[in-house]
Amino acid sequence: MTTENKPAPMFTELEKKIIALLQTDIPVVKQPFLEMAEKIGITEDEFLRMLKDLNDRGMIRRFGATIKHQKSGFKANAMVAWKVDEDRVEQTGTIMASFQEITHCYRRNPAPGWKYNLYTMVHAGSEEAVHALVKKISKTVEEDEYEILFSKKELKKTSMNYFED
Image 1 (tube, rainbow, N blue to C red):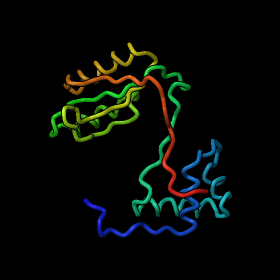
Image 2: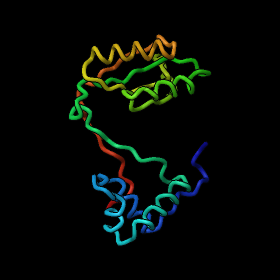
Image 3: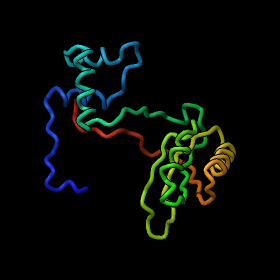
Image 4: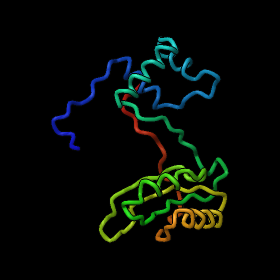
């Protein structure tokens, strides 16, 4: 699908305020959406209705937490690049994503000279634990062509900002 001839989405000023708020940290309180709604002068019900509408229109697809893995006790983080037959990618990815140690699972087109098409982010307490988990995943999905790429240093971890607060 191309984006040519496709009009850019139009947002109301209130929708822009809601999206700007969602780009910040969600408060860790009993009613976070109430607190967010009050910041922009609307009710919690209106805030939630607008969130649902933005989601229904495909403007917001999901919410996700950004966790600083090292501070959470995960000392070993690795991207695992897998070579999976295209007719098995969906099923294999679903199984891989079910492991609690996996936070991301993506299918990508292989690059020239690089045969891998499925990627998982694995988090564990040690590199040995990552290796053991990857072997378990490999056995579970019956895929044995992979590369483990350990994170050495986190250079950036921020979310995209579409509208300023």
